[in-house]
Length: 346
Image 1 (cartoon, rainbow, N blue to C red):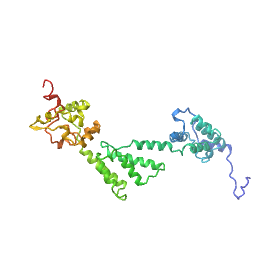
Image 2: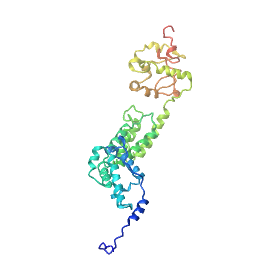
Image 3: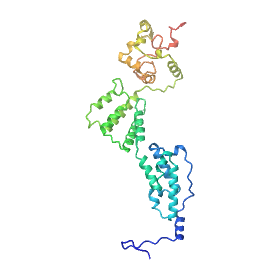
Image 4: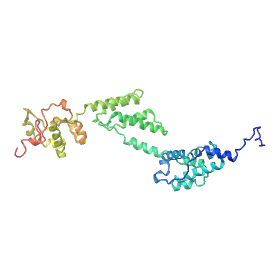
């Protein structure tokens, strides 16, 4: 007769060897072998702990051995003591084989699977340096330029803020608003198309300039500016070839600058006519501010503000006041450089 445990309860009878066989048979496990791990699969530290943890969980579940890293010696399942010891040792072998050698040395003294796994979690799962570095790199890379999709930019920004908060970084809304404005490239510069938007937002009281308000106003502003850009699609074959010829010109011929404009003889532009109308030299068509802005623009930025009818800047083809394309030889309208009368033999 079994002894009591001192509280009046009777000890449960242990199964017979034959009963243990039946219990073990109900908890069948596949034949277990420790496979050879590839170098990129091995646990190297906190930077790849999440990937390693996912791999370990899936493979131990497939082998019906996951309970041995959930509790001491798999106490959540009912199997014989001999089978329990054998399965626990198999999981320990698996964990030691799935880490690099320096880490394996740190866990060699631990003899059960649960404590081994918990030690690895304690060492490497709480280190968020890798996540912080990755998020900061993504935030530094995110910039809005006028040719970008504004909806995608806002969605990427919101996702980054959510990722920062998921690892414990809590931004006050005022800081998030400032961060959002800093992601709009050049908005603080007076010549930027977003300067008026930036000036308006920064002059508003804090209770009005909420993050949702700023995003909505920026979205409307960006879409309005994008709609005002010249249409880049050209269906006419002759216009396409003319555009290619213009892009093939030397940089000094395709770039407007103060020095270039003032070096052109004034008689070439004033005395020459196009469709009966005299043309002005370049330094008279643009203000000094516009000339300075053009000198600092990249080739792509110039295309965004260039009329595809006359090649002048700061107006679209639908608003063009000129009678035809600009000649880069005599700087009059109505013909191109290749057809200019000032060419030799012309």
